[in-house]
Image (cartoon, rainbow, N blue to C red; front, side, top):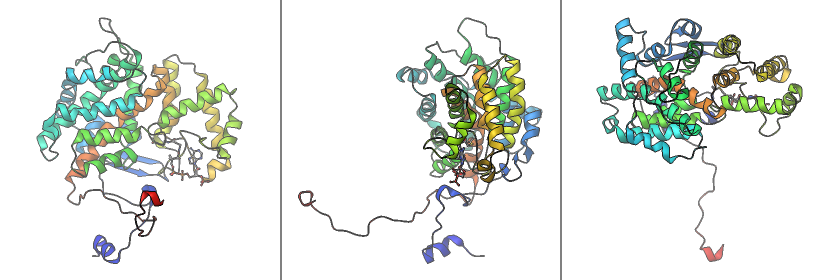
Length: 402
Ligand code: ACO
């Protein structure tokens, strides 16, 4: 019966919790994580089962609408997501303006932000029909935007989407295909990417999702909120970790492949040296997604004909870390990103592009959270408090007297 808000306001009490280690910002029905037991469920369904039996479009529906779709609902949803893949020609021109060597993440967030200018009907987040439309548009267009970002960086011509293809197949064709040349989608690659998207699709209140919710709490529209989420994902401690893992493995190889000396540097806490792809705020056990990815990595890499020496370094590094007290004491286990980069690399994506793939996978989760947040009757604008540690009041000193 105590209204904590009012009590705190009256007493002037605030809780200080940097990084929100122990503070829940909302209630949510979407994703359940038990970090100690290594459990992850979307809407109650274990990630292992979804990875095995579902597909990314179905998982997107599940996250956003809360239930697995019937056959008719699925067809309807998949059809809408297929039909909105084209980008406005003027938006396409945006890509000409970016430098060719631009990192694709800010290209992605800029293009998503720009969607608000092309679809001004999206500006009212309480117009149900428009929210549906924005949802379909974004799910359909983000793969096209991502493929264009890739084409721009590769200096290759853009390919319009082929809406007879599924979401992942269409994305692969737009990324790796060429105009007027047939492109056969490799089913192993398509299935592996679909699986990775499923595994990335939601992870409750991570940094980017919290950002989406925070921006959305001001009643900013879907595109503005997701664009902010993409920027949050860019950082190396979050989505950027999948690229950072590859850079780390390359670095170890360049130094002669000495895993032990790298681990010593990590343990000595050399500035900027971390075991990337290890550790997690919530998982203090093996990340269940990493378990699934590790299992598929071997299979996929073999089928794609990849014989990457970095895989061997990754395996050694994992084995070494898992038997080392430093990592054991701190509960540091491989996270989702430890092996994904090797798969993306085998598929032909440049390292810089890995985080974009994370964004494509995480999109349905962001959308689901944005919608849940707006529907929450307890919703309030996000506005954390602070503990002020600056100067007490002081008098202004004219410049010539300083
Ligand atoms: N390598 C070496 N030491 C680590 C690592 C790591 N990857 N992660 C944590 N530690 C150490 C810290 O130095 C700290 O040690 P201390 O107690 O001696 O000071 C202890 O473990 C606890 O770490 P925190 O940083 O307090 O843990 P936090 O929950 O704040 O951070 C994070 C989690 C950011 C994921 C961290 O583990 C990390 O930086 N990992 C590497 C980057 C990475 O892989 N990010 C991807 C996360 S998953 C995702 O976004 C998909």
